[in-house]
Image (cartoon, rainbow, N blue to C red):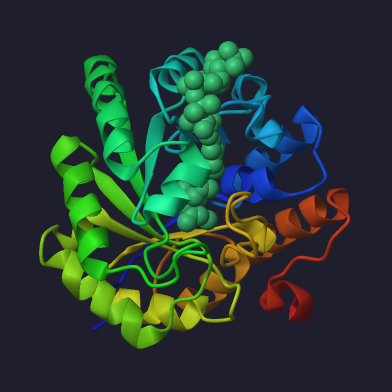
Length: 298
Ligand code: HMG
Ligand code: MG
């Protein structure tokens, strides 16, 4: 059985742009976010309040938040690894924030410079303060189907980090196949393990298309009852600490597939294609979306 409706979380302005070599102007980032909201996307990851030495592409996130036209009903979110990030997100009037952990120890060290358990301890004050000020917190788990440094990742570790994030107060956890190595049966097995400890309506699927498996794996996620999907316009980006992790699944491809399956998203495909083409031109690249490349307006 498939759901009637799916909620798409557009991560292009953050997960996408953080990994693009070309650093865009603040104005271009603002235009992108506005175009995505106009296309009907209701959840847009707009920026990241992390160390600008680690991720220079996100150094102007406060200015991006200040410049966007806020659409009623659209949630503009930001990544916040610690209290300093949360304070910045609150000042920028982010509607929602996200903390990010990993299911692999080596990836945790490379990405946020601490162990998994240290990272979870660091998120506790972030979750407490966010609760204080009434901001919802999403959790991410990276490397859920494999790690660029360790290879195999045990689904049991993914389940336990996910459960920990939920018990700390995250309202949703996004399962990131950061390097796109997952295949359908592994994806199904992972979701079965995780839903053994966390309700499926608190999970999101965050898949990368590095190996061309993302849509197939998403169908498996839908069949397992996941109704929140992360995607990135034009397939932008990935993660700078995961070699070869470029290529979040493209929003255009996800919207096309879901529309074909009769699943409602509220997103206008042609408008997302246009947003993807505009941003790709500015980045001097092609949209990775096959739908975008083949699309002919009717
Ligand atoms: P650190 O260097 O280990 O430790 O950074 P620190 O806390 O001692 O901070 C060092 C410096 O960073 C200090 O500045 C702090 O002020 C500054 P200095 O005194 O040296 O000039 N700093 C900050 N600046 C701005 N905003 C902040 C902040 N915090 C500290 N919030 C830290 C630890 C976590 C900050 C660092 O490692 C970091 O920023 N990492 C970011 C990594 C990142 O953004 N990765 C990409 C996102 S995760 C991802 O893409 C995967 C995901 O998409 C899922 C998927 O795709 O699968 C979620
Ligand atoms: Mg990603």
